[in-house]
Image 1 (cartoon, rainbow, N blue to C red):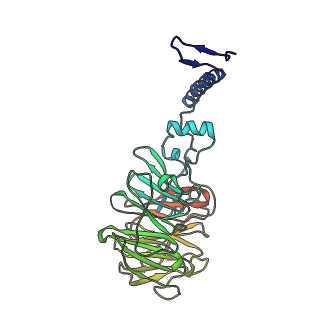
Image 2 (cartoon, rainbow, N blue to C red; image 1 turned 60 degrees about the vertical axis):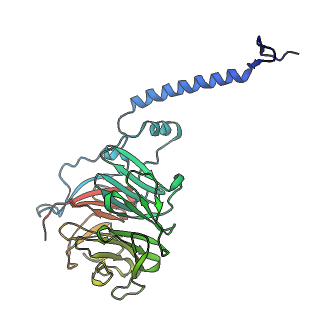
Length: 369
């Protein structure tokens, strides 16, 4: 019996088979073509940015409030690329339309740095580091090679020529993000780490300072990964730590370290020698409850994020309290368990507002106190 749908050609032994699968294939192609046309029409109609518009404040939000002279001014907040004027790429919008909501948003931001016009946000909730390029208008979620997740990226440091280092507390590794790349590559370090949570780069001296929270100490590495020295041990005395969680190197090359469960900030020189300390447990202005990120501005003021106070406190170089800004809430200038802080050379202040799933941006507008 001749098979249904079989045509014999003119050459002996040569046959082409046209059965029901051919019709099905053509129907699928027509369906895909129709779907692509529909997607193009829908994307054209929805091409405007989808992010929430920045709040328009009737009066500038400043601290302290009038009539006192302002010292800190609220600028904006962001949680998605669209909040920064970065539109979604074509295929990203196609994927969202066909597959669901986007992951291009902050989930649990813990640390932030600004490399010129490029912002990096460490986000363990997204298992990666968000990169927002404000000039190229591009967004990337940076992970390990092959798209493998970063289980707990909690610390960032900015190095020379735009490189960024990441501390992953669960991997117990420090990883490097080269400018323009989309992968975080582990560094080869001579000494092992227990629970790295924060780090600082000193490019002029080619040193990397790593806060190893689980070991209650700071490890200092050379550029080639060799261990130069360590300082600190668990305790309450000068130069001792009880769960250190943040580090910042100021313009005079002093290291400020948040000694979280000793409720204080300790200050060291670049060789790890103790220089001073301030802070105590309490609920008064200038006291600490759950100190987190620390940073300094161009005038030498010291900023300390306190997660349980939902605020940022500002001190002078002697550790004397000057001002605080923020309170618990979801509005502009309000926080919910904030963590990391970064201050650039223009005194723009970036705060990782972790449980509000955003970064808030401020600027110091006062003079030297």
